[in-house]
Image (cartoon, rainbow, N blue to C red; front, side):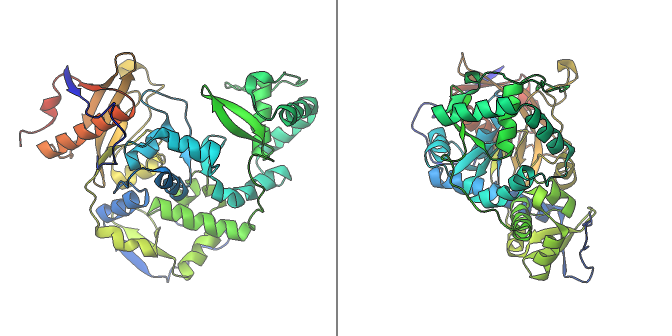
Length: 426
């Protein structure tokens, strides 16, 4: 086992270091301008759009700007190294002060927590379109229909939850009494968790919000009084804004991939994409070896030849790789989560983090933090067959892992035996 000391783990936070055809009522016309990109150029646009090619100095302002551009941070409870939303920011900013993120959420309220995501408060007029549709019963999904029926049957529980929040202002889950007369049924972990389900449904309706965290647990509050009221956009304006925003954060994407985009994809429409192309805001592309058409913001195409020199690691739920099919097509990396795979059958590891080297995904590192020993352990390290194996690449990967360790509060890194055999002697 090789052990590396992590520099700067307990010093002041340093500055950042480098470390398919559309469907719908209107199909995109075939006589539009078409640009041709190589796979490498397409990857550069994607990496740049995801803010992974340069790390600005981390600050409260750059954290906010990063989330506003990405559109969302996905929440996940797994804490092998650090929570997912924290890792997404680290990959782009380096070691930032987590207190700045808390300040943006709970003091400035420039960011807010919703089901599964942290979203920019400035996007609330966009997201209110969906919330209003659910509230008025216009959302066609069977999930919304079942939610409304269950809430109606359990109106006493609903009224009690709202009354307690109105009286006390902010409460944890344990402060509520289960007054459900019809228990929530599910084959998953939500079965019979009636109070938590009611709170989640009230959040979907925009009536309650997460107003803080105490010991990692949500503190619930009424949305009115916590977040300012907003007027929802029109459906047409929301579609155009979401389509342009999703395209700007994806770099290059097909219509289907834009529809998959978390937090914005529900609003993306073929009509909006057609309008953006017609107005010259978006350009239709062909990418070597990939079925299309693909699209990019016209203003971003000048970045196709910009070569990134950064090396960083990506959380398994990072925005740039969350669409596994797109990841495999664009980056050539077949990546699957192995959390639920038996240990002896894992290939990449429980929390395998893809290595982004320039615009390429060249392998994975499976880290785990031993918090008692202050150590980050690399359980599995795997390079792709075509990955560079020179000394500079090795050092870049080691530096990224050491920086991750310091961010997680570890003071040393251990690597598996025989790691040097993965590299050449150049």
